[in-house]
Length: 182
Image (cartoon, rainbow, N blue to C red; front, side, top):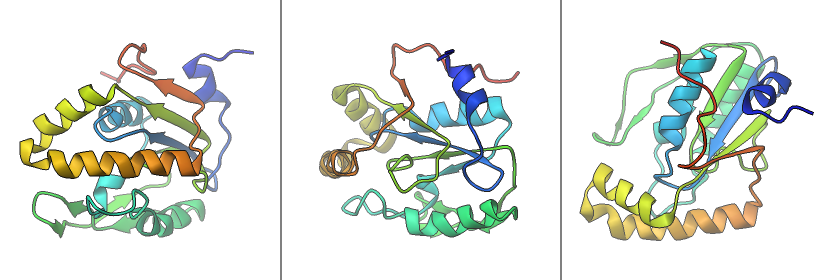
């Protein structure tokens, strides 16, 4: 049995109507967004991220799921899904964005691979806690660290309670899953 990342992708079956949903999960600042963007580009697939929905730092890591679920239902029915992505910088929703029906859809964010997600393939992206904390500070500034620390505890609780599993694990030492198209 071929267990290479490319073989895993090729062997996935549709799980969201005719779409093969690839869930990219892992803790905050692990590199999920970067990895998911590269994966979506390599697959020529749309990308939907949990950061496109409002989730308060003191909230449930799955607070975004009820807003994403209707979009996934439309896609499963073979129809494009339109929504207004949340802009974390302005605290408001931006212009409408359409997610087309495609062979693959990459779903990224904390909780993307939870047991209720109809993923065809679950990918876990991780990095050491101290690396993730430094990345969060670089990305959002030092004032965010108390909120990030509390969020880190909540997301760890979510992963443990959910029993989140992955078909593939990506760490800083891993080889890239797919190369980005040039």
